[in-house]
Each structure stands twice: as structure tokens, then as C-alpha cells.
Image (cartoon, rainbow, N blue to C red):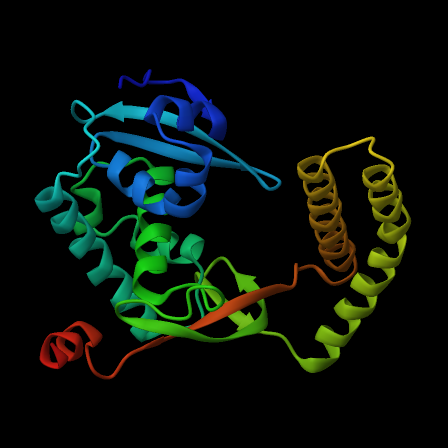
Length: 249
């Protein structure tokens, strides 16, 4: 497989290039992205719920089996940096952790593009902590709750919102969702009438729901000067789960 440096691939184009099925991608996306990172530096671009992948640099000839040693060494560095950030402030996102570790010498040594640092950070945080939903915990800890915050970009930290502000945002969000419901009902009607597929229905409703949420955030921002964000709170296990698993074996 050969990807073109500088080219931006849609998800479907990347799946085709990797020579895997949609089902394999759906169940093992992070595994294949982590493997891809051994051979290409890439940047993920988010457009609503859609993603594209821009190839930044070729590192070597692609192989499906990962280069385990080099990827483990790199991930160990990232995970050490992530752990230090979480220990200092557990209210975090992958984006904020990236901003904090981006200029650390150990990360700079890889000469990764900013978007690549974000992607490695995101993947490693998911491995370390799960996502608090379908993956309840990871190798190092878990997400114990999510709290409403505003971003203090100057200090790279999230500040918890007061309950009064949270209630105001929820009212704005409730009003926005009321506006969106008529459109979403029409999409469901089109699906039941056979005018669109299940995939088109889910995509359109998902886009509508996301756009409505962002619109509510923007309305709040215009009134109060910041966007409400619900941020994960991470917890590191007191005992290394890998050591526990080894002893149990």
C-alpha cells in the first residue's frame, strides 16, 4: 500500500487503501490507525461528524503487522506525558493535553505535526482510560464523570461552570432542540416512506443534532463570552491493572 504525501483521504478512501472491509474498520478503527502511524504521519480533520485524513510524511513501507517495538516506545513516551498532565489536573480533553505536551522535549523529538501529536494523544488516552461508555476503563484508569466547564485557553485548563450558568445553557439547548425536532421528524418520515436509506437517515439526524448543539453553544457564547463544554474527569488507578492481571494469571 502506498499513500500519497500531501493528499487528503476520506474515510472510505482510506479503508480502500488499507484493503480492509467497512466492518473491520468499524470494529478495529483505532487498531488500524495506530498501525498506520508506524508508517505515515497523518493529520485528522474533523468536519462535523465526518473525518478526513491528510498524509503528512512517509516513515516507511506500510505493513499490516505493526512494528511493535517502535510503536510501543513512542506510545510509552506519550503515555508518560499524558499521565503527568492527568495527575496535575484530571479535568481534561485530548485537545487540551495536546496543547500542554506539544512543546515538551520528549514530544518534540518525534518531529510530529501538531495534528499528529493530537491523534497519538487521543488514541493513547482512549487506550489508557477508555471512553466512559462502551469502553468503561483502560490500562491506566477510567473516566469517572463529566462536568460542565469553560476553557481558559491562556492557562490551558478547564474551569467548572456554576450551576446557574449550566441551567441557562440547558434552557438555550432545550429551545434549540425544539426547533430541530420538526426537521428531524421530516427525515424519519422520509425514511419510513422509503425516500432515504437507514444510513442517510442516521447521518442527517446526527448532523442536525450536532449542528443544533453547536448553535446553542454559539448563542450562549454571544451572550456570556464562552462556550459550555462537558469535559471528562479522569482517574488513574491506584494499582497498575497490568500488574494485577499478571499476578492473577
